[in-house]
Amino acid sequence: MDVMLNAMVQELLSDIATSAVEAANVERIATSVAQTPRDVGSRECDICMNSAFEVYALVPCGHLLCKQCAGRFSKCPTCSKPVASTLRVFM
Ligand SMILES: [Zn+2]
Ligand SMILES: [Zn+2]
Image (cartoon, rainbow, N blue to C red; front, top):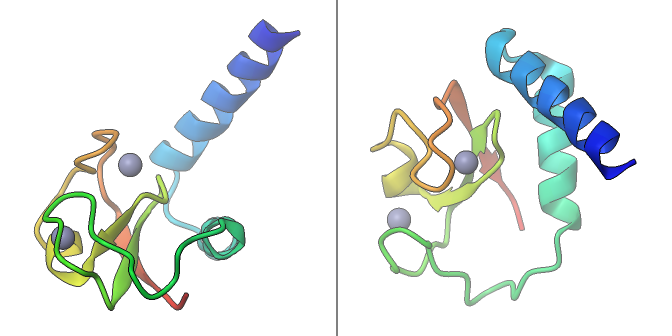
């Protein structure tokens, strides 16, 4: 069963990566980000370790970066997926 689930996830991920960024995808990522429990207020950027007061999600992978880093990478530094756009996240 795990193998099947994995295949489904891979297929979904490649669909997202190859299709244009759709509003539904952006919405889904924003929702999952918003539902992730976080220590709001003391969030640090995983890349530059600076306190990130403005947090951006990379689309389509959904990894979070600070504003500076989000504008700096054309590929996600965490998972290496191409960055189609960035999305401001309000924690
Ligand atoms: Zn950063
Ligand atoms: Zn990523």
